[in-house]
Each structure stands twice: as C-alpha cells, then as structure tokens.
Amino acid sequence: MLLGIHVQNLALIHEVEVDFGKNLNILTGETGAGKSIIIGSVNLALGGKASKDLIRQGADSALVELYFKTDDKKVIKKLEDMDIPADDGNITITRRLMPNRSVCRVNGEIVSARVLSEVSANLIDIHGQHDHQSLLHISKHLDILDDYSKVSFGTLKQDMADAYELYMDLTKTLENANLDTESRRREQSFISYEISEIDEAKLIAGEDEELSVQYKKMSNAKKITDCALETYQMTENSASDAVSRGLRALYPAAEYDTQLSGLLEQLQDIENLLNDFNRELSGYMEGLVFDDETFAAVEQRLDLINDLKAKYGATIPDILDYKAKKEAELEKLENYDAYIQDLKKKLAGAKENYEALAAKVSDIRKNESRTLENLIEEALKELNFLDVRFEIQIRSANHPSKNGMDEVEFMISTNPGEPVKSLSKVASGGELSRIMLAIKSVLADADDVETLIFDEIDTGISGRTAQKVSERLAVIAANHQVLCISHLPQIASMADHHFLIEKNVENDRTATHIQVLDDEASSGEIARMLGGAQITGKVIENAREMKSLAAKTKKLLRCRQ
Image 1: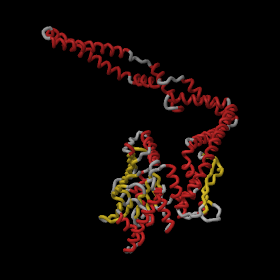
Image 2: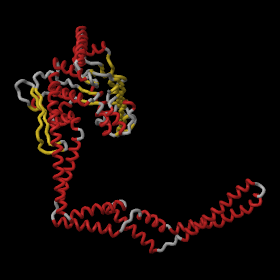
Image 3: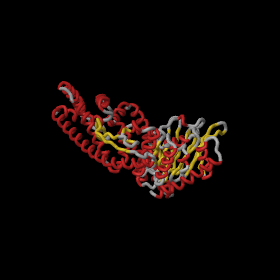
C-alpha cells in the first residue's frame, strides 16, 4: 500500500506531503490545478522519464519520495535478493532529479532504473491519462492476455523466449557460414597464418611481466650500480666503523650495569645486520653485469610479444584464447561439409524445440482466454455496457517471435445483433477508457497488485455511466488501494478519502497544494463540481445527498465481495 508521498521543488510544487488511506482515494480540483503533477511525481519516482525542466525554477534539484508498506513476501524476497534491506515490509523509494542526472534509491540503497522497475511492478499499477489508447494496438492485447496467464505459464514463456533466441542465433550462423570454395580457402590460409605466428612465439603466461622487469633493470643498470656502490661504501666504511667503535666503547661499561648489557646486545645485532646487508649488497652488485647480447635478446622478445598483443589480445592469456578460437574455426573450415550438416541438424532441433514450446504457450493462452473473456465481459456489464459481447481471438502470427506464434486481438460488440469487431473500429474514447478499467480491475484481482492509480479514467463519460464507473472503482477498492484523479461528482462522492488539489499564488509565484477533506469540505468540493460558478444551498444539499447515497451503495457492493 502507498502510505504517502513527499514532493519538493517539482514543476509548480514547492513542497507537498500527503498521506493516503486504504480503499478508494479520490483527488479532485479545478482544471489546471496540477492534479496530474501528483501522478506524474509517482511515475517519476518509479523511474519514469525525467527532464531538468521539471525542476522548479530557482531550485537546484527536485525530490520525490514514496512510502510503501507491504506484506507481500515476493516483494520482500526480491528486495533481499538485491541486497536491499526489507525493513519489515516498509519500503521508501526516493528519486532526486538534478540538471544533469538523477539518483534513485530504495531504502537508502542506490539502484538502477531497471531494479526500480522490478521492485515497483509488484507494488503499484499506474493507468495514465492516455493509456487506454494502447488498446488500439493489437500487440497490447497479447501483453494483457499473457499478464493474466503468467501463473499458468510458470517459466514456460521464458523458456520459449530462450529457445527462440537460440533458433535465431543458429539461423544467423548458418546464413553467415555459406562461403564459396575460394572464400573458404582464403579464410583457411589466413587463419592458419595467425595460428602459426602465435605457435612459433611459444608464449608462456607471465613471461612478459618477467621480461619487463628484466628490461627495466638492464636499461637502468648504470644508475642502479652507482646508487648501490655509494650505499655500500657508506655502510661498509663509515657506518660499519662507527658501530664497531661504539661496541668497543660500550663493552667495558656493560660489565658494571645489566641494563647496558641489553643495549650492548642490541648494538651487536645491528653490527651483524649491517654485515649481512653489506654481503648481500656486494653479491647483488656482482650480478649486475649485463652483456649487450642478453639485453638485445630481452628487448627482441618483448617486441615480439607486444606485436602479438597489438594483433591478437591485450595479454598473453588473451592471445592464447584467440588462438584456441581460431583453431576451432579452422577445424570447421577443414571439415566444412560436416560442420554445415551439424549446424543444420542443430537448427532443426532448435526450431522443433521452439515450436513445441510455442504450441504449449498457445494452448495455455486459448485456455486462459476463455476465462478472461467472461471476466472482462462481466466487468464491462457492470460499467454500463448492457448488451456487450467480448471475445478474445487468437490467430497464427505471420512471423514467429520471442512471444510465440500467436496474434491476439480483442473483439467487442456493444449493440444487440451486431457482430463483434475490432476495438479500433467500434469503441469511442470514453468506451476505451471503461474497457481499460474493466481489464485493469480483472488483472488486479489476478495479480494481487496492492495499489492501482487511475489518472482521469472518467474521460468522455457522464450520467448513469459515470455512476457505474464509480461503483466499479468502489468494488476494486474493497480489496486494493485505489488512487483516482477525477472531475466527476459521482466518482468523488464514492471516496473513502477525498483530497483537493489547488493552485495558489504565494509571493508572486504559483504553487500547487494538496489537502485531505473532511465530510463537510468534501461535500463543498462535490457541490463545486455539480454547480460550477454559483453554488447554492440546494447544490450543497444535493452534494450531501450524493455522498450519503454513495456510502450506502458502497457498503452494499462491498458486502457482496
């Protein structure tokens, strides 16, 4: 459930914080008051498209925070799998929008837009102002049916998509493998040359690093020798003599004081360490003699390795991996006919597997479509489509795809005796809006999404139809939290929580505010929606009566659930 929202410096909003309740939350206000900014804020927080123009003028950044509470174990587990603290089902989604970037967080952890989408998909479903227009696109119909069928699919649809990807990869490989004899010979010759060049080098992993160390040492041999010699002279002569004199001076006194005996031992250790150091340094200097032939060999070997790196890979293991791949390619070319036959066999198997999975998916779609047809048709009747017939037609698609081999289309008849036709040929804008509401309500019950948001779902309707839509929203809100922006009094009167969105001028600047209305204030807002500019006592009385009747209807409808 969406507990609340906090918005700061976004568009016309300076700062707004509002707490939402269970069941049906209705947001109303004058045209242009900024109602859609609230829904836009939610969309933005959930990873929607952001623009720096949304930042309120004069502000450095905009902030949207959403507060959710969920008992859904799937959502909590998803968060835990992503190493995001679940916090007993309390989820805070934050997005800060800055001129050049935005930052998304879930419970304080920075996440990508993809992760944000995965988390929010099980928390909230948003229906925007023009989303019902997507019903005019047949591809959307397949998505809706598959959303409804996903429990029955299990992993089958993903398995089919994976099988399709393999099928397409093998198809492309076979297409690219059709080389003529001459091209094949040229390719064999070139690959053989590359393999031979790498083989002749007899590369050993790590040798380039060792050679680099040797080369650096040889190149700086004179400087190293001078420094080592100077150090040896200082430690062998000055330091060693000084420590010896110190030992001789301290030795007689140590016989009289045990504390000095300890210090004497330390100085003896220093003398021993210094002698060991000088011996090792002397031996090191003796080994610093490099002949030009050795240096040239190291330099030549490094040049060879670097040349191979420039051609075949950044490291010796990369070069050897490249060689292994080329050897596999050469084997294919040398046994070309067998390779092609094997590829065709694999392709046939991949195609057969894909088609078998697609057939299973199609069977599930046909099964589930019959149930979904009935549910949507019943929901449409409750939305004042009195003689409606709704069908889901499943046809073979022209081309296979990752979604299978089906094409799905929703068909409807809204008049008795008329055959069902495509939605695009029958439904008006208002009807599309109601059809989408029916579909969303059915999917919500099947999917257990906790919160649904409808932005002006009442477009193009009025009268009895508006009353039916308000009743349907009340029914959906019995088992879900619903947020709905509306301009119709019939819907506003059905609210369990009524919010007013207003636009005011403060300090010569326009700002949008939102406030929760009590019963009396709610009646006043409904009266405004009924009466327009002039609100009389009769209009207010009418608004109160609407709220009273809506409360009784709502109670009756929810008792039936």
